[in-house]
Length: 576
Ligand SMILES: NC(=O)C1=CN([C@@H]2O[C@H](COP(=O)(O)OP(=O)(O)OC[C@H]3O[C@@H](n4cnc5c(N)ncnc54)[C@H](OP(=O)(O)O)[C@@H]3O)[C@@H](O)[C@H]2O)[C@@H](O)CC1
Ligand SMILES: Nc1ncnc2c1ncn2[C@@H]1O[C@H](COP(=O)(O)OP(=O)(O)O)[C@@H](O)[C@H]1O
Ligand SMILES: [K+]
Image (tube, rainbow, N blue to C red; front, side, top):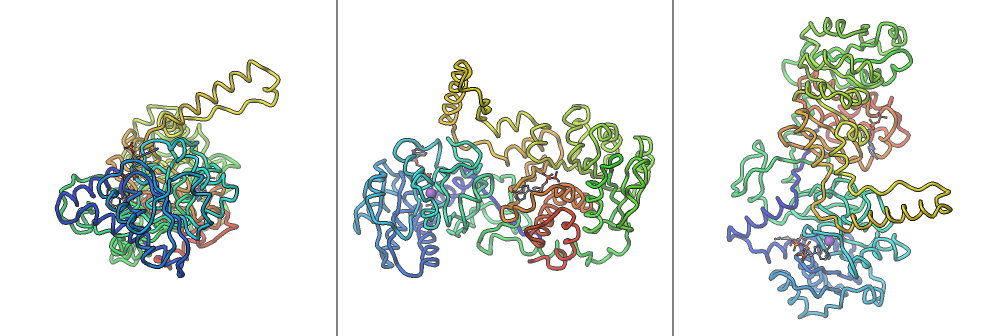
């Protein structure tokens, strides 16, 4: 069930490449040849008949890969146009450029040269890769804009663009485009296919990455011996300091088999289905307590409770205030109900040590959450804090201080901004100025102010320097600060533990999961997994996987109520 792939930041990737080259066992030119060969191979897999290819080469090693692609496609019978930059390349890229120049010319990488040529079947984007340090500008920015959209018909390029490592301009640590607003933009460069090397980078999975990379293929270029492995994967020799591991979960992209975790997957599957020895009694699967809110607000907590039951918690109790109990009389009958009006009643319930996992927030009401949280957090049990509990947390630093490593916070971006405003601000920097009112144009002073704000914003965009602060950084910083697991929700969910371990889960293929109540179900699934004894980071990660798989199983038209009901099918086919 738990398919994972290690992710490397660009700095880690560079360190691994340097270590490989320093070992004397492989040269930079050999790595470049392998990288270019992988890209050329993927192109030939998809375009069976040789056609016309335009290869756009930048000033660094990404451009070097491009020259290799040009040479290999030429040898395979393709007609090749190469456009390159004048900048001084490094020795490996220079060598690859020279090898190409023995076969054909390098035209200047200008819009005029690009548009002067005939339409190509394939455009290879080898302008910038992991070495992007600042927003593209001048002629190169104009070309990337043209390819991204201003050519009028961006679908034309999108269907033909093959990116080497990433669409140029994308920051591979954050998935944002330095110099551009962080929201999707018309000129963002979108590829049909991206071929990246050794391991996915955070930017392939976060923010704009998944949409702009298109199909993502991770090519093995022989760096496995220098990569840092998980201890349980079998240690490999390495001269590099151990990095906190970041993993991609259920990657929707092709990775070499050696980069997956199939054994872990099988163990997770049998554990989830309760097929392991000694898992016979209901109490051996824990008891989850789901706190519910007052009258007319019980639906959210009921969704959580249903999900906790379906994921296999031995017992689940729903705890609304006593006056709301009648609302919860309907199914499922498997659910227990108990009125909890105040902290004393809650402490009374928690006197039973078998109640080993709690969930508070969905439909709870901020006041009730604030009143109950000291008793909940003081009990030291595994706890999911969602929705209203997060708002209560944001209003009271005293509550923040009670968080512990068995807590899982599940904020979406808005809630994250409430609990960790400074981190959210770093993520959003620079923030576009608020739109002016309709009557702004008739007020010269307001108009002037707005123009000044826009100019300052554009200036701040131009000053952006990579690597940009990412959702991965934000979730890690938040987890380290509060001492709990933080699960930052979105199509690119990031799950981080206080010790720096982190996981990224991509759900770009299930946009219908963004529906009211889906978060309540996720909180319940995680609470159920905590009740079953999983540590907080694993419960949050596995819960996120299972949740998205349930959405995938149901398909478009999904409502949150469908998610718990889809869990049995997901558990039946854990590998699918
Ligand atoms: N290392 C290896 O062994 C392997 C690496 N491989 C490949 O190398 C790629 C990384 O190569 P890289 O480090 O040379 O960086 P790359 O992305 O080509 O760009 C750097 C150049 O662009 C420039 N530049 C940056 N931003 C700019 C801007 N906004 N506007 C204008 N210029 C800008 C920057 O200039 P500078 O910032 O120094 O002024 C520098 O000249 C990686 O993605 C993979 O494809 C594979 O072959 C496998 C083996
Ligand atoms: N565009 C998207 N594609 C896929 N999943 C998404 C998308 N946006 C949000 N999600 C996921 O959907 C769920 C929504 O949760 P949340 O925002 O808390 O909604 P609610 O409060 O209505 O329950 C989360 O699991 C989140 O990761
Ligand atoms: K590129």
